[in-house]
Length: 455
Image 1: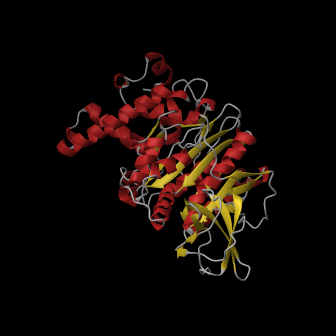
Image 2 (image 1 turned 90 degrees about the vertical axis):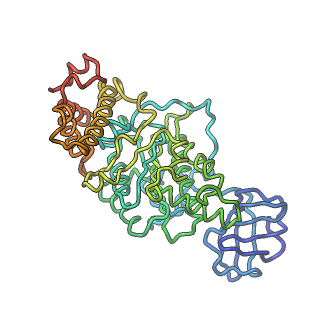
Image 3 (image 1 turned 30 degrees about the vertical axis):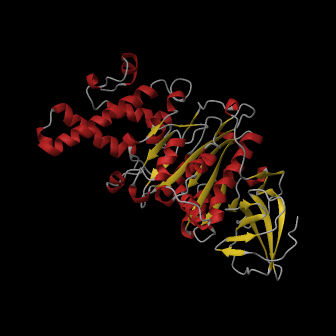
């Protein structure tokens, strides 16, 4: 329905206030026509009777209080979808930006999605191989899981994201694809992502949504929703196994904070809106497997922790919602270790049900437990060496120090183009554990030790 009066009551940044709107709906899309024929789109973000606040996607440049006409569309934001989205690059609002033309849709879907009935969920079990030893062996990614990566400014989380996209695979690889969403990235970073996927010949199984740092913040808020909507279409309607990589959730949260402030909402912790938890949950909980489809949606959100603070609301709330985390360590990066994954601060809460016989290998669980235990003792030995000196350590503690160095340089550290199979990763783990006396391996039963211990 077109609003009869012409003009606005208020303009505040990218927000405009309109009065006299009949039967407005929250999240409803509107078309804004400026004198001269220019058209912009927006969505209703607040309703007070017939007075509504509209967020203008392209910003309010060129809009005055009297030169606009607004028309309601009667529906929320939708994006066109079809199987041909694979291999395509879109902007943050789902519009093609690769010069290959428009999508001819088989359907249109609401970007806000819908909640998955908990009763219809299937418990995640099958694992996804990333080719990265520290992830595959110790923080295994399970199909249908949400497993975030906590990074800090300056670390190589973009490179890690590219490596995961390039190497990720499942047993039945034919129906596996990746949806990649970048939020608030600079032009050179966006080009790095695109060029990396093209050069590694994986772009044909990737759907990219790129929101640049100079794009409107409202687009940044929409970007992950477009990506997840595409992922749900591919997974639940086409039966594909979809991995969604979203970077950087910190840029998303900061856009949400700016948007909330512009609406005059009362800020919560660190200035973020009080609904940050539920907003994150509306994204993260779109991962999963449902009974009515053979497809699945797995998520790897990547975020940079402000001031290296893991208690900041962004990683803190993300940790509450997701099933574990992979934490990047600045000290490892300083020693030239890539990827600098902090083993003791990382975990995957679902890995116990997706590894072992029938999934990876029968020794996987025991090996992972023993590697964690041994690496924890390495830290104790290092602390003791810092007090009394390494020369004064016992013979066993010296072996742990040696194990720690080898573990960092050979197991955690691996090349950017090095794609290790799960068998190579597990065999390497046993090779390193064999540096320790057999009596120290108290997390592994005798049958497994007899088969795999090389000491």
